[in-house]
Image (cartoon, rainbow over all chains, first blue to last red):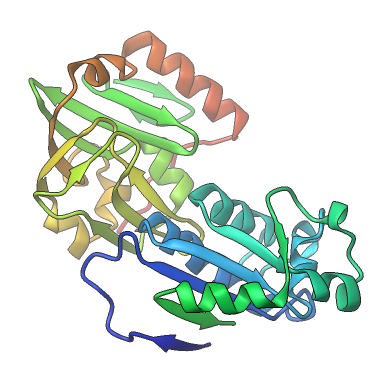
Length: 134
Length: 149
């Protein structure tokens, strides 16, 4: 994981914004769980948390995909994806990655995913207090 | 003490049950002590970290008074009523497993001063609370266990 922005956590993170860039997809299941878990926790801390999925990461958001990604501790990725969603994490997917790399049609994504262009990643990164990449 | 699916549900508490939240509230006048219920601590699993909002924090009903991490679950503990945190339990921050081992005792999370009598009255109590818990425990197939610190 690499990050940018402030490294010392504020005493009260309420209202801060974090952008998480997800580039890993189902090809490496071990790298998929921690970002959703961390995002869920940050949202529970009332941090405005957005996950931006690009390259092969949008494949995690395809309907039925998370259920097929097993975790070493048992269970599958779906429970962590749901936990993040329930806690208020926003999911944003790169339209170009979906179309050209993952070949996912908009209707194949789970509910609540917003499809955006690459320029939006720049906007989100500049608006965020911190950017984390996974 | 009512017991459903092995879950202890003390009758002297009121309950806040909403979405994934299942917290208890001990109401004494406008003072409210808040903690996780037995089903909530079971669902979370062994709790590894707790962050509690500091005294003086003003919260609306449904906003977090703490965050809890167990490795398989990370989420907020919501305020069952609007009010001000007057005391945060420092003991649970040092030993988070108290939320698992003694959820209705030493595992309390915050004490608050409530601002809305109507919200206090809307908390679930008695048979209404048990009926709601029965529904959730059956739906989510929860059977309570208490891990040992």
